[in-house]
Image (cartoon, rainbow, N blue to C red):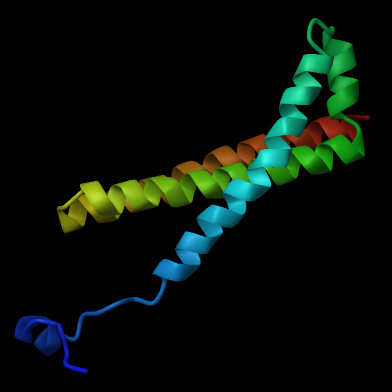
Length: 127
């Protein structure tokens, strides 16, 4: 089998980073995990539509509900980070701009994820 790479590519030694398959599968796994988790969230919001603050905090303070919400947060934030990474890598062409955007994407996802998890944990531990 002949090598299909250009001579310049062979000289630079740049090739696959071997991370594409893992990235692809993690997007699919988190997408599948988000389906039942999001359905739980939507169902809970429909059932508690019009509920007062005390009822909602009591519901969200339930440890089982807290675990499901934490799973949703982690899965959704990770899925978001992976998706935005693909968009950044595909549409930002300057290396410095791409690197800064990827760093910002990671910090944004971490900040939002931690803030959401702290809020859920605060509700659960207050009960």
